[in-house]
Amino acid sequence: MAEIAPAPAAAPAKAAKKKSAKPKKAGPSVGELIVKTVAASKERSGVSAAALKKALAAGGYDVDKNKARVKTAIKSLVSKGTLVQTKGVGASGSFKMNQILAMQRACQANIL
Image (cartoon, rainbow, N blue to C red; front, top):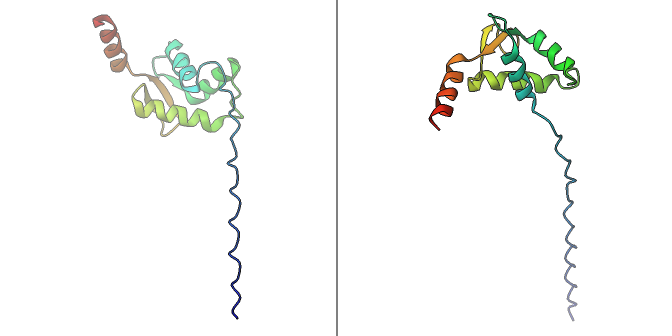
């Protein structure tokens, strides 16, 4: 007589872990703070990256803790065309507002 081996029991399904949703911090983003700082500047040649970091630190932003965020925000603003890099390469150098883009936005605001 052949004995039939019992079928292995199915493994119990694991419950999916829910990620705890962190509340989004209130206040403007790093990019918005940078745009405000550069727009407020009256320098003809633009604002240097070091001066930007000093202005952010004076405004209460922890620059030492968020160096990478500041760098990526500067790079993304330059690639979008919001800022123009007058000197340097990457996230270093001097930056000023893109006048052409500002004029286009003002014209669109007047049309609407």
